[in-house]
Image (cartoon, rainbow over all chains, first blue to last red; front, side):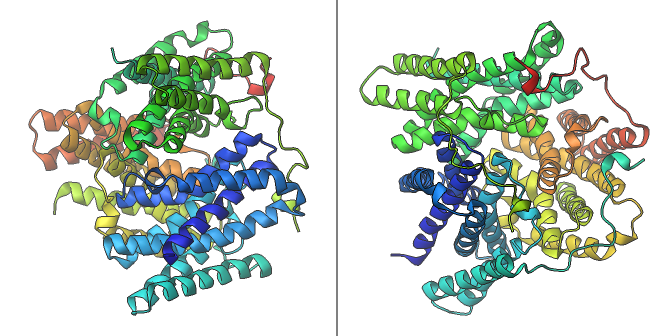
Length: 211
Length: 211
Length: 211
């Protein structure tokens, strides 16, 4: 199977699982599980296809992706209670999805435009947009504003893929290596709390305190 | 008049009205009424056109839709004070728009791709996206997270239309019947508080309480 | 240089700066600066290109725009501490970006569709969407819900450009005049607290207080 296509299905499935886990944390009904699994699973790839002009979007051309989301929602609906910490599982699955999608988004951006800068952006965009939608719609605090490294992992995955592939490394190998790099960065951040120095000259005042 | 086109104008008008009612609840100025009426009225259809690749989007090809939104904003600006409970009216108009758009989105998805699964998703997406935008921008609690049945009504409308039309029922009849089904589901949920059993093994802990 | 293109680069740069300032107020790391600068800088133009069907979007065809965002993020990262009130600077730069983008969005909408109504909407949409995304993602209170005139300034810029250009005024002159009008309206609102009468028959009750 095409490794990029495999990353695509895997990304959809694990992001859908994070959406369903968010639904379980909010105690939604089964339709809520389906909805959040769908939005999170296909959100990033939808935005990628739209900005690259690759329309209709991927799931409108191949509805199998929708079946993947629905299946994952059913599985999580019946098994979420077995998990000790659903939010931790959500974060780790999100890390897997982030890694898969950063590579896949970069590969598609590179194929469509030939520009490494554009590929970096489509990689990061594809990797982060589903999670942003999930957190907005479920009212979870945004993963983006969490202290540990997040966007950086997507950037690392996209940049590694672009560098390796441009250097002549074979597609499958470049994709696997870049996936591993992104996952190591995000996994290390989750496990060991890796952070970058944050900007800290002064925090911003609240807008209403500004004369 | 084409029944699908009629549902389209009706959907734009009632969603625009819910946006203007949200503006009145937030005490915005007249431009705020226009803005929220516009975003809510055309939001769902815009997303539908984008994912199906039917660009430019509908209101860029036929600006009459913009006129509908502006007219509705004016009417609500001058009449909202007459309404006893603006939030209740908002919810009922949202129910009408949800029903109209679930059918219309499904019809367009089916026409564009021939896939029932894709048509289900474009139906639900068209029906819910305007309301999601309205609640996000106006800072109202999301209709999605309300306890009673919401997305299910959109799903029921889209599924009924797809089933009836695929079974050979004439377009107008299938559209009217599916609209009625969606509205009965959502209206019943609003009137009688219908809910599905919610997932409730344990509520999620707050992220900051997780070690 | 084409005046419309100049407004485009200027709009990207100042919106990117507001995104980076929001990142500094939230004490994000450097990647957070890049991310918010990028989203805010290219958000409005991306939406404009999508609804007009002008795909791939502008920055996927010309990655220089991404370089502009990255450069601005670096500059703000190293200089934000020099600024006395970052939120005030953010609001003033946002006013510049709003003015540039309202004209540019209107010019592109007019060129693509010939409809003044559509051009008004693409003008306002381009001018406001980047700021909406910035505030949503950074958790800042939305500029849209601030009391002083905001969307109106975008509307004024777009309407002036459409009126002047349709009346036969030369493109560069019409663009400069409309930019100045938008900036005077928004700048006056910021400096003197200009507001429109707000809708105030009764504020909305909180949804949970409604029987």
